Image (cartoon, rainbow, N blue to C red):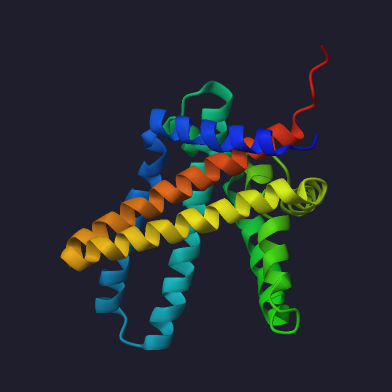
Length: 228
């Protein structure tokens, strides 16, 4: 099915309602961010070589990001289906779809790298296209049980049939992320710890809300219309 502006507005509104009812969705991100910060500090003490340290950090960021994407997307899907999300929903998603999430992410990294290389020659169009056409990939992997390649092609097809609504989703996420960064910087003017805390929590709220919006759109776009 295709989406109208009204449908998109309803998705935005209900995604916020679901987040307010299920604030637990931000917990995985907060926990993993704390774990990542602790490991980064410990690794700096153990690894003296800068190149090795950088490589280990990249691998660590990939692993933690994979866990977060699986957990948060799984919880978002549960929230849309049942109006309730639990940490157990994220665990189930990670256990069953973690490997597929990793495969899809690796493919997206390759595609994103190509888009970045071509960005200068295309005045940034390739980066915009990358953000728009592959936004539903993780939802397709976790919620739709698609394999990585199928998830990527399905995301592109959904976005192509709903270009303007999908651009609206991407635009909203960018605006919210920018606003969150501004609020974090504002809090940092009063106190560095306050800025770090506000920025960190807002980042996880933004990730959770954006994931809920994308999950809601994916479910709407892939659910056959009911006959009256």
